[in-house]
Length: 56
Image (cartoon, rainbow, N blue to C red):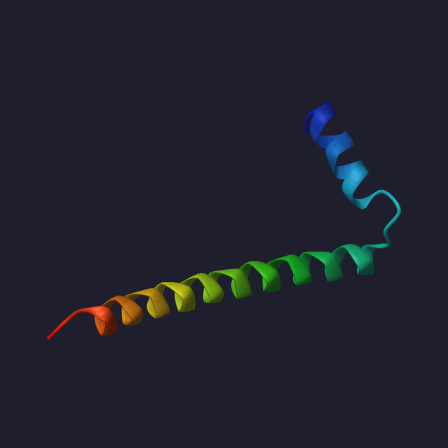
């Protein structure tokens, strides 16, 4: 592990307990999952709007 990595880690997790760090990791994972779901829904909505707006 490089010195830079250590200091980045220390800046992020410095004052946390192990349980708080685990909780943070869980929340970050959940947030990433929700962002992905939102992006997929927005893409589906844009495709539906495009389909509806076309003249038949």
